[in-house]
Length: 569
Image (cartoon, rainbow, N blue to C red; front, side):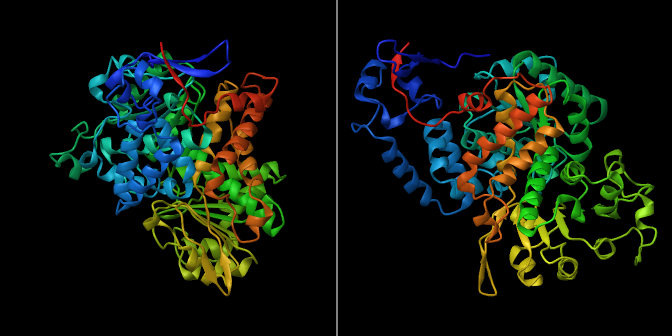
């Protein structure tokens, strides 16, 4: 791996921690990992060749943060704010992450969903500076050297996408790089991963988005997507290159299409420490929401009758982990099969339906369950499922706005006092039902959480707070926990542990106001709890180093964005 250009050191006489840096002058100011901007002290300016290159005043970080906030607030649109923050990160990583931490509720929607969808869609037009690694078919046979060109800290986190299924907006070609960059910014802010450990990668294997191919400004590999054996061989070489260059890395698969997400996960989850956030992270987050909601309304996980609309990677992953949580709660396989229902665009996934992929076949309902149902048509539609199953939980990962109609939501409220409604699709324009409608149609009785942020809803003289079911509450902790104990794999037990840990952070004060996920301001504390639980589960399952003190191991891996003194190396 390339040299970072600095090293952590401690003065033996004073025990003071400092950075020994090799860069000087303008090179130092252009290196975002070590640039302090106007915060360089007088002594540092003299010893590091910065004399005359900066304004006279030495700023404190607090003064810099005020300046950043002022500039941020002057941006008129969310996409302008996103561009501004990307520029800040390209100049000064420490200041960027500190600003994110100081303003989490304002900033997370800008650097990730929903604004990141706009950034990906306009990537080639707003591009300013390269960040991350782009690997195209032209790199076949030399992927390892491409990876090795990126300076990286020990035990890095890699977020990789092939750009085909970006949020709810589809194939964005090279523009999908916005997703790994945004996810890794959340690793830094929430889990405390040092920015030198964060490696965004785009597998730019072409695009079938004709508007991109016809755009003279498009920056990606101008070719239709490679498929079949050529694609599989490409991914296999990439994984081999990661194992060679980053043998101690965690690899997070992100926004792959349904046909490749499961294939890649199953092919490599035991070969390299990895997980798929769309399948497994979303599942852990959804199960956590159900666990918290169950605590609010009473009963147990095995009592729920769950309808999941959307049979892509997220829907199948959610069904898998809910089944595991129900089994953990004592439910038999017969109970599980009769209480979990997944629908795709053609209706209910029923055993024997001829058009099902292997992934969908795994989560079908046995025909015996629906034999006595009263149905209006085939395939069995959402209204029929809700009515016959007497659904108590609706989960939406369909990307279809408004699919949870008044009739559907109202009917669910007939079967349970406190229906659980989770429209999880992103961005906001794709949500299956708005919180205001869900609460109005259930007489204010629903517990609602959404994938994108929504403001509180005032209904019947009560203020209902809408928890955001954002994967940021789980994936940074999963990665931190796995790396802190050098896990060999991410197991289902570790995912369940993450879900339980997240649910436990939702206090009774939040539940009393209808909120089944924590506030975004607590994401850093939440990530620590998730990481500890994941690390312990990894040790218990025998896939990690049995460290004597898990809490200490997790804490040792965390970084806080503050300036250290610099000395010439």
